[in-house]
Image (cartoon, rainbow, N blue to C red; front, side, top):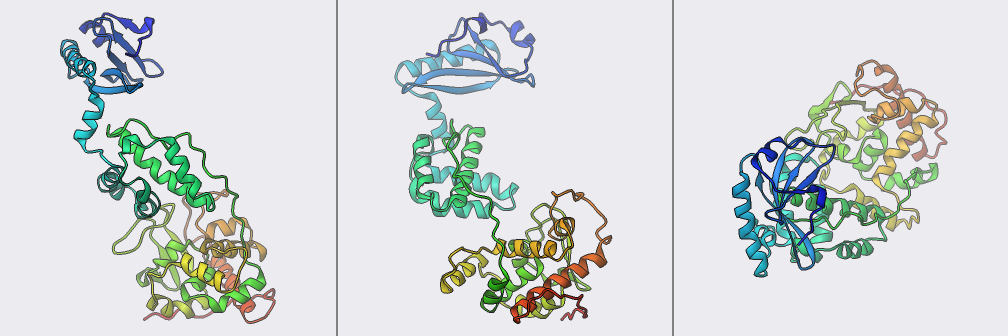
Length: 389
């Protein structure tokens, strides 16, 4: 039995339960008449009955119910029945979780996906794919309540060669356990207090010679990514109806059938330079499901590139080219739809129209000049009308 603190133990009464005041942090008041029963008082003033006992050497907490709905006498009777189960070797909390179907980790993950993440998180598919590929093969058949921190550490150890991926997997699993706790399906989150893999902030920017070498290998999708500098997921989902008078107008929020919305939820407007317009039809008519990251890995392997390149590095290269040409960091943040860097969250989308157009044309022309063997330093603003089907 969990021993109550003396100053929080008293013979409870209905008057006391109704009148006890909340504090800055949650606290318990134990019942002197039924020692396994406690009144939990939240800072918000919410009160609930808790049955607290030990099973297998570990403390177990079972919520009996809201104190506003269940009176003291009924709470004591329920606690007495539960105490008899514990005395007979039972585990009421485990029985409740079994009844609610927590079961295996695979079952918990599926409930989280169908009941919560698919309805509230627009990037839920990415997290679900990580769980399916890296977690379920090992944990899928284990009872969710029996997974320990040692299991999590072992999983992270297998992903140590790719620190960023390991951290993403850990975060995806942790969210599932945290949701399970809120639903009273599990008691603990074994992912907590497990150290994340150390990783360096990525600073990879393509050199001029790399752009020259890689450009002929790029699909229209990767070329478009380097020319526009937007996020890979946004470029992959570009739609013809979002192109208006040469501008790519990206809605901040998701739209059916296949637009995911921008990462920060803010609508964004990007000028398509002449070189991107020349690729536009081929890009849209190509394999839009082609994974840019896989394509980039295949290219690096084929060309024996030692320092790996990711699609996001193309976005970073575009941003660095903006500053390299002297347009400044504010211009880079504005064009790449960053909220940080001193740029206001909401601004007049047409205020910088002429400047943004000039910047996009200059960056694209420099990139294409490199692919043609020129130094690309002397760039001028390109012109041309956008051709639409």
